Length: 490
Image (cartoon, rainbow, N blue to C red):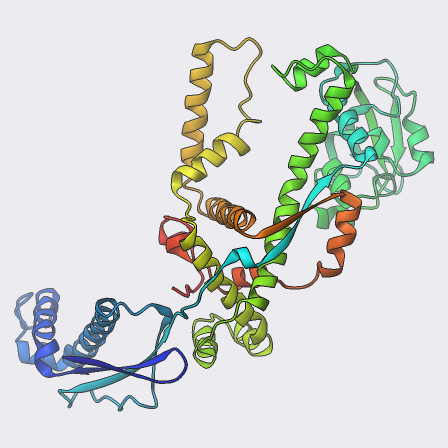
């Protein structure tokens, strides 16, 4: 066999693969012998069908399949041996490739267009970006502390229903005559009194006691579709159509009395931090909120920075090839139409992926399984497996071993794990950009941050568009191929 190349445009090679009979015939003979072993035909013992008959029945198909495999192996071996950094994947050049007659011909020639990755310098020190440090407003901090006090509060069972209480009871759907509807709603459920939208309905519940009954329309009491669906134990689509009167019989009342802002609460919320007063408690709560806002800030930083780098870092691309490649790898007519209509956006996404790959290579960015396991153990699972008060060393060890086991089991959940891989990879890319670029830190509260980002909220940034186009497997994560279903540029 013979493989050769010539330049065929910007960053595009035309690769020619020539095969002769001795390049594929031994494998064809081997495959036909294997086929013969499996054949059964009247008049012949199993596996003893004459070879001329086997060749007549399967020879052309086996020859075509073998030639295709030998040709593909030769092409990719040539790319590897010549250290060609491929962009996308080779595309058959049908205009150059002669029509093959697999039944009659012995020699075959195939042509492929192969795109190359661009070579360019990326000095992040020459680029600037703004990083927003989001602080909570006083109202947000007050609400956070109020919720914290409620979370660590005391549960009581009052005699009568108050505005902040939860009423547990039995709900029965009524027909037009005010009688229980046959086959209608008949469930035990919970109602948060403060969620009742209409004052007239809320007043019906206030001061009611155990075993009292209230007749009302749930659809008018609860305006939030998800709250109504939860109360009725129905899907949201079904709850939207529900307009009947119901009778609610109170079975019990629960009231959460918020914890007082004192040292006992401070120690429960921030164990081992030695907080003694409300001022220090508020400062710690503010840090918690800022950490919660940090992901929003980081997402905006990465999207905005990717947009700026795509605009300002110049390098050539094999544009026509990439358009052909994107269309060839699309799985639906709608996707192909989207590429035609929004090709500039896709091209920006490809530019960002190339930049992202270079940033990853230059800064040793990669995500491995153990990174994902650690994320599960430190970020996702601790709230489900909290440390108990006065936990012994043995109990701590047992809890940590269980947590580790659960985290490794979660690694098998492909879709969720793929999301975590992408999140951790993006985080490492973001950290690299913060370290290398000229960063201006701008402190804002959440309201100001929302005003800042809202004008661009509907725009598609390269970082977002890139996720539609492809994800780089080898650098993004040392992870099995099945987590990446989209076409890869590399």
